Image (tube, rainbow, N blue to C red):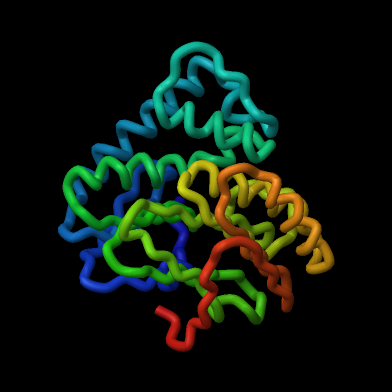
Length: 244
């Protein structure tokens, strides 16, 4: 079922072409130097196919809420999800949206020097100029007020968001937004879910950040719960004076 994704207005980009590709449950918004609709669709089908085949062989992979033990050879996207889940202490499907975004984004870098792939609030970015990713936090008064500015000229980066009050993804917490920045989009996705599960009120922000810092290879965390915000890491948080 298609859902209007208001948060997509919160990605600040310039001089890139924007297009949408929807395949089954995968709904991507892509920014690239040229329209690459056919290439994007092909990449989505390829990587979704890997995941669907693996789930057919191992049905519990889709439903477990715990890290998954690797069972035999697997495509890169499955390996990325398994590693991310192990690092974050969650089930591998907590990394699916980020893993798809990164797999498609890296594939598109064969066709374009700059690309941003957003999949359900999880964003893979490789651009020559700084990009600001606004934080959509639903009914929180801080929603659409701040963003994370990233310089992705030298290497790609990922920003993934989990919410216990928005969307259809499983979260055991009540945070309006938990954003994680990392090199790996699968890891950022899994980590955002893991940290978000710990937030039941704004009083949990500090403890959740402390717990999140233990997850290896993440660069930063931003949590919004109600009227409170907390952050950790090497991040440039900027006000959205004129939200994109």
